[in-house]
Image (cartoon, rainbow, N blue to C red; front, top):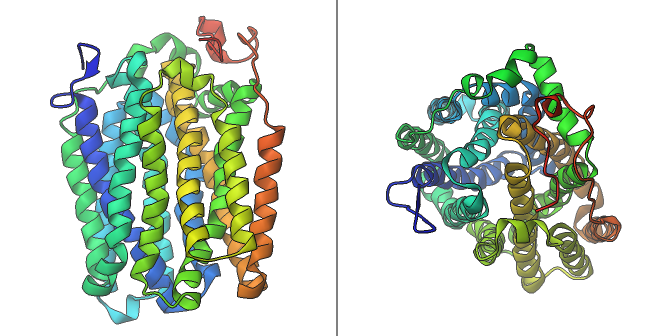
Length: 430
């Protein structure tokens, strides 16, 4: 709802989405810190922690063709509600299972991670695709920034207290708490009015594309046929090539080398989130078209290169704080630019598939990167960890230097199925 050029938060569907999504984000952020500490207590292995991330993310890659088509053909509101309910039930059952000592095993945690990841494969792209349905194009960037910034604040809170709640409540209660937040989120999302059936709204497009595979190929063509889209999707996935080194090394650096309590790990996660919040607040003052004409992505990668270099030279409290904050801000810049570009420069009937493909790229790179990074960290040990940081600094710098603005204009008639319906892509021309 738009009122005098501003979003009316007290009654808008966006506000209901933000609060619902925020509650579940709070629970999940607490849960993620607790899981890392639980796996460290059970295994003392960075590799197992990497496997947890693998199991959480790989469903996003495996299910993306189906998820994108379902999101574009059905009510996006219904998809996010069902995903929240399913994840809530799984987390509640997992919490009950962890009460039994014999079931307190890494295998159970990995299995739960996979099932919840399957729910994420539907939820994340559905939420991103729903936003253009409930706000105007002029407010897309503001809505994206508010959603991402709000989620970051909930993440910051959850990460800051996650270690404390794990040590005081225990893993079973933290799992069940996360399940409750998913169910509360679903309850809030039922109040969202937008429930458009994509088959009715874009019947002409879907009548020519009957199979799931054909519909998935239409979304894939919208990415592969345009250089700018390929660059953005690769840049977003590239964040998951860089982040595992920091995430997996942090518990060992903080607890084993700096001799700080486990709860301090969550504080560094909170610092990273603070970087993202700062970026989103700054970006909220920029218009959609201006944002999409800024060199946000290469600048973000340049700063990542600098911070990983500093971390490779010396690891102390200052470099950890700077790296965590910078990574959060850089990741926020790439995310906000990419999401806004998909929403503002692509036809609405493709949004679900494009966001599903974006998650597929993340979910393909991230699990492999977590497993490989966990193995490399164990192989190098604390004394050789700096080599990995310096390598990643070089990778980020090369990508930042090689990245150039790509403008392709309107696609040709043979580019994708959508073009034959007159749904051309505005690409990068405001």
